Length: 353
Ligand code: ADP
Ligand code: MG
Image (cartoon, rainbow, N blue to C red; front, side, top):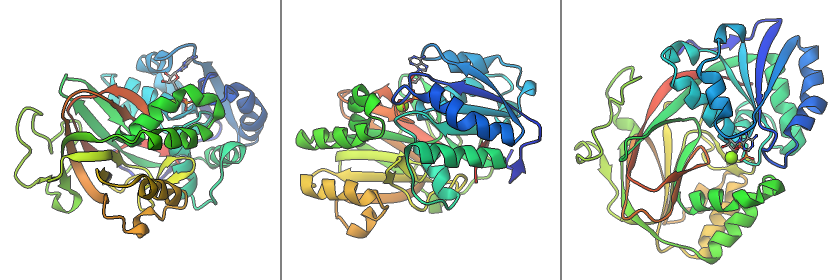
């Protein structure tokens, strides 16, 4: 893995995994109205698989004959791509399966990867139909490049592969609490942020990480060579954050947390980095709100807020005290428990500008 840029063949056979319930529930109509005519012009033939329930797409790609397809397109939010990725990872031939380029078309309410790819392509910030048009155009051009993934493992023995981010505290709460407003589209996050600000909470736990500068080893996958078991102390060259009270911890590996949230402006598809953000307890509501407002333009780090920290890392561990609250992987909920993760560089391929 890791060969750099490639281009989709023509004619191109695309399997489109589409969640009709994602976002405002318009993914199928938008696909037919916006995407299909553009693909026809680009000699890309879509075969649409409409998901009927959670895990349907995951099961589909687990035993799909992938030689039939030149690209796997996900038309939904980040959640469905997370399923597809983990379905591919469950295959015995995962290494080869991950060489099939993946493509995200924003159909959901959380379209962080689509917004990131639009940003990496150098396009202006757009949302909704314009973001869908931009992403479809990127698919029509057909360039694909390697993307880093993060392997996350939990104390109860679960393992996930993640392309976007891991969250705990404020942002994870906003993400999950606002799911009931999914029909508002991206506005669900604005409403959720304001609601969570009102009842701002503190989360206790220990955060440790391996700074990016300290990387020693070579190729990693599939073993998590940077990690030791969760029951053991982190290796001596790791940093243990001295404070144990947080408002939020978010490990992001793409630029965008949401369509309108440019959290890690320096992040790229295969920069080999986890951008670890944390906000220490003691921050005022006003200062926290300012951070989120500035994140619209990606200028939050310029605020020099003493409670906000951002470190490039290769691996991290989070040991929450107690199990209250929620964690998220690529925006999907996870029970709160000790978690650690490490980057695996250039593990899959994604269609990009
Ligand atoms: P959104 O951004 O709107 O949340 P996602 O792509 O994240 O969109 O999808 C949310 C969840 O919907 C995913 O976890 C997926 O498993 C689930 N899902 C997929 N198909 C269906 C369906 N037909 N009905 C209900 N849920 C579905
Ligand atoms: Mg989602």
